[in-house]
Amino acid sequence: MRNVLTTTKRWSALTALALSTTLVAACGGGASDVAGEGNSADADTTLTLVAYAVPEPGWSKVAPVFAGTEEGKGVGVTASYGASGDQSRGVESGKPADVVNFSVEPDITRLVKAGLVDEDWNAGAQKGLPFGSVVTFAVREGNPKNIRDWDDLLKPGVEVITPSPLSSGAAKWNLLAPYAAKSNGGQDHAAGIAYVQELVTQHVKLRPGSGREATDVFRQGTGDVLLAYENEALHYDLEHVNPPQTFKIENPVAVVNTSKHLDKATAFVNFQYTPEAQKVWAEEGFRPSDPAVAEEFADKFPAPEKLWSITDLGGWSKVDPQLFDKDNGEITKIYKQATG
Amino acid sequence: MSISTNPEASRPELSPGDPPAVRRLPRRANGANLQVGVAVLWLSLIVLLPLAAILWTSAEGGFGAFWSAVSSPSALASFRVTLTISVGVTLVNVVFGLLIAWVLVRDDFPLKRVVDAIIDLPFALPTIVASLVLLSLYGPGSPVGIHIQHTAWGVALALAFVTLPFVVRAVQPVLLELDREVEEAAASLGANSATIFLKVILPALAPSLLSGAGLAFSRAIGEFGSIVLIGGAIPGETEVSSQWIRTLIENDDRVGAAAISIVLLLISFVVLFVLRYFGARAAKREESAR
Image (tube, rainbow over all chains, first blue to last red):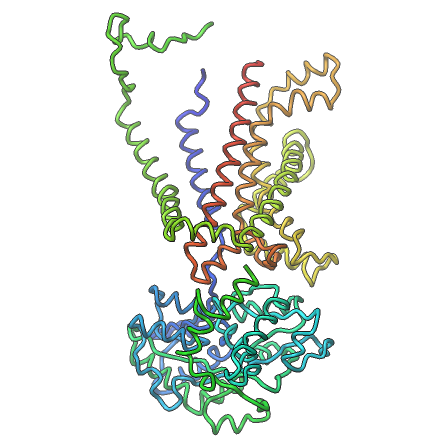
């Protein structure tokens, strides 16, 4: 029998196969985080910021302002944005970072436990929380379903877009808000859980992985209302309604102590609390933690009737394991049952 | 001319008088051994090692964790969506891939070379770009008024786009090599085009068609980048298994993700094996018919 493939043909076939295999492999899906724009290419020091999904508008404005200051001269920032839980686990398993900014405190606590963030990261006056937001309803133009309050979300036929709390920090805020409102600050636990149960099982169909993905899904036309950070709604100019009772979102920032540029990173983080930086955050739609600056931007950030906060519920160390533990959290279990 | 069917005849060192000795491995030149060694090493590193790692991870939680991950409502829904859409797309692409290969080989038309090169475009295009392109064509801002984002049709279209080249490129070389004389003989014996196609050409192409279909199917069930934007990952409707796996990874459930991957791999292996078997049978039949 004739040997069909001569040696030359065999090698060229193998080369072609190797090349096409590489090509096919390269066409696979990418990582789930998004790179933000790097700053000045001629920076002497580049800090790596690992952040949750939505603060890019703020960081991209505040980094050049920092580079313009005395301590920030020659410092560039490259950032990576993604679901808060996802990003935190990434840094824990070795993703390089100098500064971290997550949506919820437990994602920083994870790094404290891993020895990557000092225990006194929140010892400062603002407790490590330079900016924040509130939970808001982003609705379709004209608010056709007239969604004003938490009970309106439970009206038949209303589809609510909110990310999955298993990966997203935004999701936790979005579910804590109605929980706190319905349970009167945690006093009537059963009522709070009952509301979350009905909301998730009847009105949530999709599972976006992060706050930004949820916004994208909503903006592409799915759903009647998006539960989101107020800063997301402001950034995308979405018509939004702040419910009368909502939750105070506070997003922690910390220095990673294995950073190669510890002094610059610390200076960068400290800079966030200066009035200059606080104004930038306020301009980009984030509620500043500095009271004086907050006063200045009071028109942009209306005060809700009742603003619940994590301290009312007993702090993250109590709430996170109780409601959001990966296997046993009450809200996690509701979510897993409802969405598989 | 008959070929000797006795392998011993070419091995004079084993004369009939010898006891039924240990069969010696045929002696090879050292160069060939090195070839085999390098090939096996590469195969192991690139293919076998990751496979073993996935198997290991999926077994980490024991059979209970494996089974609960694989039988969860979302996993089952994703399997259903993945398999139905992939099978449909593969069947469609077998038909159209064959048609395109036929036209490229047998017909002549202006810009034929350009079309031939374009067929490889889905290979070259990053899959996320494919998803973006399809979204802009068939999403909310569609210039042709078709809006199939977040539907199974959108996913099917994306999968059809990326798996078309497999069938075309599998069939094309075989079609080129086909002996026209047999077709002409059949025509001269009075067969019409349909009969020639069904009885002469299709059986000859069957092995390559099946092989191309197998590759297309395997790619379709594992595809992620090209469906991520246009599909929308709606559980039970457009969420395919690769997206569910990614969600599990984001939710820090590596064992579950590995378990689902193992199921997809098994399905892929079984389908490829079955198609190969039928293809080999068809090829043998062709050989013996000559």
